[in-house]
Image (cartoon, rainbow, N blue to C red; front, side):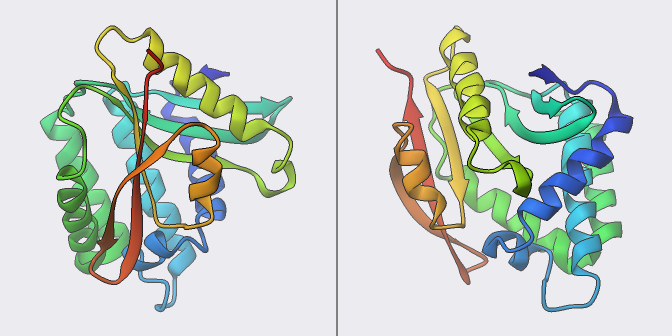
Length: 201
C-alpha cells in the first residue's frame, strides 16, 4: 500500500468510490439521487473531496493488483489544518458539480458531524472502498490495519473516528473494535452512526 501523491491518478479513485457508494443512503441524499445525472454528481463529489485531501497532504492509501485498482482508504490525520484556498476551490468545485443545493447539504452535514468528533487528536476515516469483484477477500481488513497502525504510531492520536450511513457497515466495524458513540441524521432524513476505535492501551 502506498499514498497517492499524483493528482492525475485521483480520477480512478473517484470512480471507484462513486461505484462503491452509489447505493449509500447518505451519498444519495447529498448528491440528490432522485434527479437525473446522479452518477456524474457522485463522481464529481468524490473527485472534489480527493483533490482537497491531496492538496493538504492527507493520507490516501490504495491497494492494487498490477495496474488494477482494488481499493482505497481516505483519511484525515490528527491536527490537520486545511489550507484556505484549497477549501475555496473545493466549495467552488462541489457547487459547480452538484449545484448550490448539493453544496449546501454537504456543508450542513460537515457542520453537524463536527459536534460528534472527539476533542482529543484522532484520525478520521473519511471513506474506505473495495471494488465489487474483490470484496470478501480481506482487502478491507488490509486497509483498516494500515489505518490502525497509523493511529498507533502517531504521537498525538487517541484512535480512529468514522461515520457511516449504511447500517450494514456497523457490525463490520465492530469486529475491528469500533464502538457506537452516537447516532445522528444527515439532513434530518437519513440515519447515520458515529463510531470510534480507541487506540489499544
